[in-house]
Image 1 (cartoon, one colour):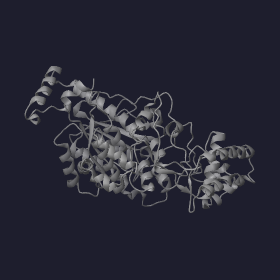
Image 2 (cartoon, rainbow, N blue to C red):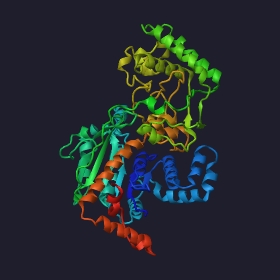
Image 3 (cartoon, one colour):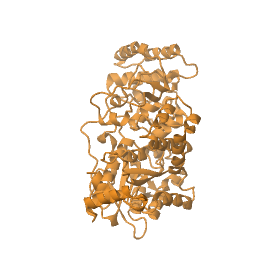
Image 4 (tube, rainbow, N blue to C red):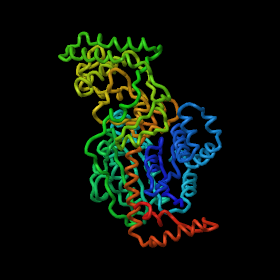
Length: 551
């Protein structure tokens, strides 16, 4: 007996990280049916929308024999035209086109958006809204870069949350989950606190509609919680990344929902090496004319840049770099869109490994190094060697003079400690969680240098995706720059999965607290529906049987 899952609508969906977490939650019955179903995801970027569509296709093929065609496609064994021409795949794309919509909230008409929402909800009152407005206008880095920009207060992204608010007002979800950067807590618009305004608006979006605005990490609501109580520190919850984001849990007051469970902190952080260390070792490429010999020569020239470096660690650094150079003989491949690899899963796996790995993949996709200028290769090699030796990533004030970038704000000052972004060459340490993966990774790899000096490169799309906890079978469409952008803009799916479990348990508590039919009565309804000549006439909802399947 198939039970209808709880509908989820995802706004500002990006490449689908938040939706992936909700869609991955299964009931504890033998059929392992999905508890939530993404019925509508809205994203304005056409490339991210294509990724959303492809992921929807994968979910529809999963559990069928036709899923093999998806794997063949991302392995590069068949092209997109051939993939789409397969009948089962064509049908999945047809259904996915209804779910994933390429619309720009605030620009598309309210009528068009509302009609789509009503169509997918089909009158169901219990549903969940997820998503987060674009965050660049709120981020600390964005505000720093635009400190002197007189048009900053006019940035429309300040007010895109009102589109999220309008949909809450018009369609009244039982629960909503809204994610944004922690910079929102201190952001001001026309002199007023953006966070307070958003909190007040969400708590009472319209007359007669009220929500408790809760935290996933602290008990209470908007009346008792401090702004910082809404921040989720991802690394405390099994995510291999120090990603700190504001995440709000809104619950409709008239449903009288009990106190929800909280995210459970873990005892130790998941590190970068634990997350990406099993991926094939590859070298970076050299800009313009790349070859293995040219790349090796560019890297091997790096120790010469230390000449004239007046530092007590110079001899040790030189020795460290030559030791790394000796390991480069193993690196002759710069990666590929798909690398066949025998999947040998360890006997004892971690939560993250079980989440990421897929033995059906037969390898690794989108693990391809990008090209760098010889001067940047030297900086990457120095930085990763320094981090390996000193236990921290170097700031510009410790760089040898010959390796300093030729930037006006670097060459024009005698005090390198005072320049902005003095840590612009950031090594992702092997024994720590990564720093926050953001969309800037698409522009260059300076903030995302691999910890292994012998590979001398920035992170690949797959490595960035793993640090964001996207499963290995998640395929990002578009060129490499577009893929990096999609990864950086996402909510980590494994974190989203943990949020979804909390929402699921909260809905389950609501069902338990209501007067509902006995277990025997529910089983009789299921039997009646199974035996009826017209089973659609016997209406059994997930609300009726959630107790049976979630215990």
